[in-house]
Length: 56
Image (cartoon, rainbow, N blue to C red; front, side):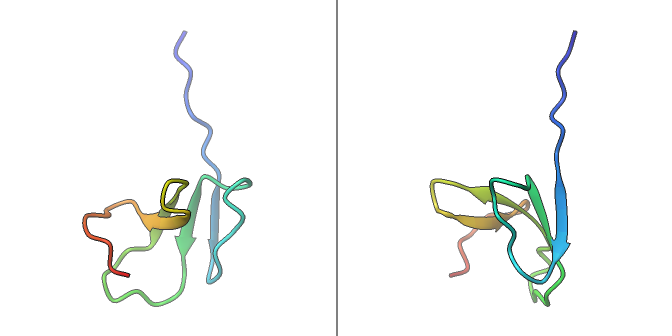
């Protein structure tokens, strides 16, 4: 038997609580086109799935 992750998504302009959601679909404008984010506890922030360089 294979276990699958049961991701939860949140679409909003404001970051959700990372304990409640696996992914955040950022509805605010992003000039880099990064709209689907996941929480990185090591950086203590939401980062885009296609993250390559920290833009902060």
